[in-house]
Length: 319
Ligand code: CUA
Image 1 (tube, rainbow, N blue to C red):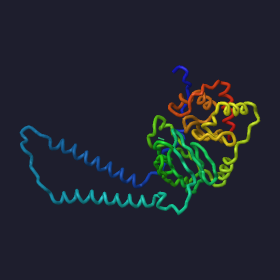
Image 2: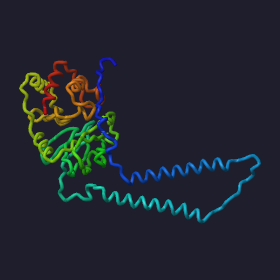
Image 3: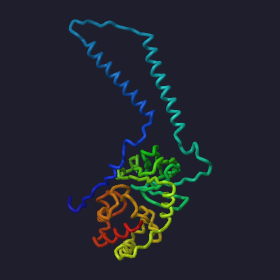
Image 4: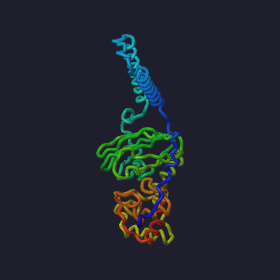
């Protein structure tokens, strides 16, 4: 592999507990009925093939034409089933909260989400907080998320929290998000959007109300400048290397093209879930972002090991 640095793709997948995803009773019903009908049809075909196969000297089998009772039965039974499923689907759709049907006039979104290539930017209009790839939400309270995209279509989906919703450029969709319990919920982009689609992950951290309020206050505050020389040097390199033309760090730079890094040190992952956020992984990433996540906009800046060490110390200090 030459000079391509080795890295360990994020092991966060292990944290996603498939069993905790709620199954819809309607889905289970349709699945069971569909499997039963498939088995019945396949069974009857297999039985007929064997029972009525051509035998030497068998002649032409008995011919049956029309059977009113059978025809009524196999028309009425599927019709009744389809009507039943239609009714249940209708009721399910009515009870699934979809913004638009129950959005009070003038209700503003709590979070504005924009799909990027290949990461997520999140803005909280009320508090002015901007983050990337990880959102915090209050547990037990519905949050209105406005969804749009930068240039290509994405799809916002946190399976454990229910619905998914498309993100289109130039159009806004809405989604209610509610975590009943505090915890970490993993999400993905669910619409193919280019080479790094599979590494467009997101995380929702649901917290009790007071903890969530503290998080918001934290985010509104620029991280304190660190006194140690290495992070200080990193900050100077960040400025000298013009990282701020793409990235924003409160009171330091205002770039919008890349993820906001104001509180980078407190994030769980690097680059929308590719790597867990550790100093070692950040160094691997900075050595050559294109080796870790080929095709992203961040080029290989060919930083020296000294520069990388200083930048890592600086960025990880931003909490
Ligand atoms: Cu964004 Cu797939």
